[in-house]
Length: 170
Figure: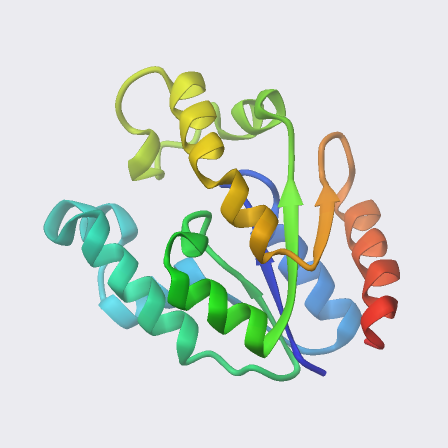
């Protein structure tokens, strides 16, 4: 089985869904953000502080391309689609599932989250809207499958993905 890459904006459920999907498919799961922290030896906020967003994106790309491309579910970071190389790697090596949610849902899910460097300053709702709009086309171009997670349980989302993966003989 080709790798399954979960892409989408922060707060759409990539981490939770990757674990549930990996369990159902009985394959290994990697959360890219966790792998980056392990690889870099520092937290994501610390990477942003010391190396900036560009440094973080370098760690992200290096991590993504070294993950197994078979029998694996990978939860990418929300900005993984920003680099052409990442998008090409995912398209070439796997099935790309785009998890989407309404901006209201994302704001609700992230309202108490203090770990997101890109949301640390300014009006969180406006920041979410602007970042999402800037990335939306990249998500659309990269995705093989689009799943709306708004108002759905992890089980509902996972079952929907599983039914859509049959189109790819998974």
